[in-house]
Image (tube, rainbow, N blue to C red; front, side, top):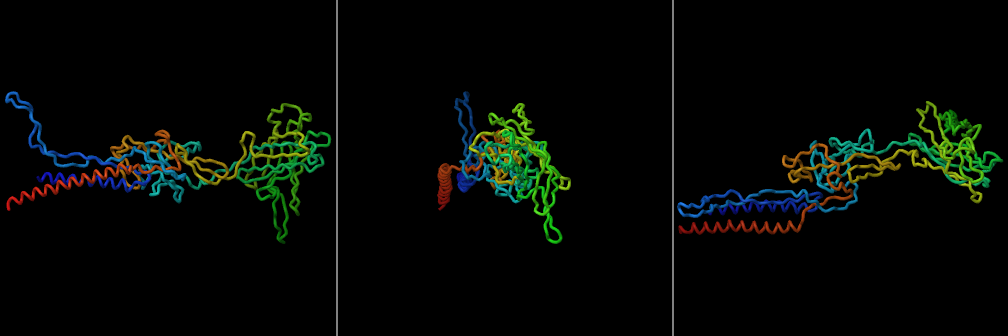
Length: 492
């Protein structure tokens, strides 16, 4: 009779344990990346009152089964449903990431690597990608030899917003092209006219912006298909000529002198710079002009340079002229690069006496445009976990890659709180490197979080059965107590 009491007690204990697990599941129904647990029971040691016997022909008796009395129940396992993916919750936050597969994010807290399904990340004060609990998100770093790739080596913290990642290096302009049409009947382009002004925007190697002003007009009165192209001035971002330096005398008066720009050439033409000391007016003088030549019969482009009307118009040397700006050593080096300006997209057709020319930074192949310093404007993460910075100069820069870890037995991981797990002897080891997310499933989804995989309908059903089991075991104790009471009353 005492055995039934202790069996009832064991039943109460295991059902209480199951109720604890159910309570934890339901309390985490809205916890990001939470994995529900389930409890299984097993019976425990049996007391054998009679062992089993086999048939005995000599005595003429049949075999008998063993007689055993069970001593209650025990918790066999508490299993986490790691492989069951929770529903997706859209957040549109670029740092919210969900794994479409069996992998785990690798995070580091206090120098130890842990694993999580919760991809709710943010940035700390030093630019590290981290979890809300303060763990570093681990991944692969950018290859120093190839900034378009990452190195698949031992994982390390992803410091995606470090000072060097907040901007990109500027590039000098090396190519440009002029397009449009010149109408030979336009009085503005006549030999004695003011000419058409073409403004070319470009950058030096330090990212400063400049404007080169070119003038186009007929080379002489007789050749209406040949036009002189001259450099009038080059100005900086403030609109001041790069050839002028403003100085102030001791009496407070201002005077202007030449800057450290030592020379400028346009094709084979070299310019002398003259600066008016009182007004600062700049005059670029040259003994000749670069000639832009068209076919007098068809109006098609022929060449730029020496004005030759013969030769193969597909020859690149006839299509462009190079603008070269020199600087003295006192400027600390020359930040300007030679700019090849392509004129092959210009024509000489009739357009009712109006001409229009436009200079575009960058070549016809889209290269050589140059760019200013780029400052970060945003971050994106692709399906492979690669993190890219976006910059206001149009650049996109690889900053690192989020990788994932996989285990032979993910249910063997040990939960340590804060949505984190750690490896155990039964889960399998972490190799220290991780894997590309696309190698373990569908990759990563950004702007989405994995919700808890707790099924409330299942939890409430198990709660009912657990409650009934607990009640039934309590009845075993009360009934056994009643029997003991009857036994004691025999003495009365």
